[in-house]
Length: 194
Ligand code: GRF
Image (cartoon, rainbow, N blue to C red; front, side, top):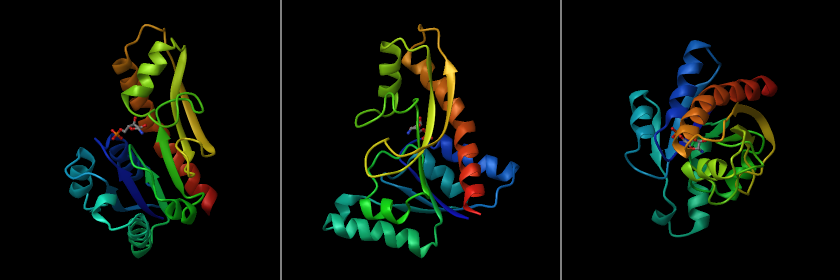
């Protein structure tokens, strides 16, 4: 399977996915990297791995339709089978979501449907979890639909909290969990596609 990964940040999930696929090894090729930003840690890593990197920014297109078309054309030109969002902060255009229904995943650092939705990304999620004094939190891999964080859940994993951890501590623990969860979810998706 040919995979595209979309990231906006550090790319630790991208690294975890690539490492896992090399150790396991999974029948996948990380073919394409897409970001909305130049110079992210994720992009540096993707370049180092020899993954083709493309920056897609909506503002550089004359209309939303052109941007949507460019996004879809890019995925099709590279014969992408699966799209993984890993810390990608932009909304994926709806035609792309439709074209990859059941083949596009996102990872979210909470136990959805809790602490999801617009504005719930990065440290904001863990701040809300800490404030609510949650006793458990975790991570969710779900299929992408047209809303934020509402698609069908594929896999979740949880960790226990004692209610005194800082948002930063929670973030670190959840990120470690994500690095195991996302490869497992990808593996599950691939075996269901055979
Ligand atoms: C992760 O916590 C992910 O769940 C969220 O953004 C973060 C990305 O981290 N959507 P990284 O770029 O993979 O290190």
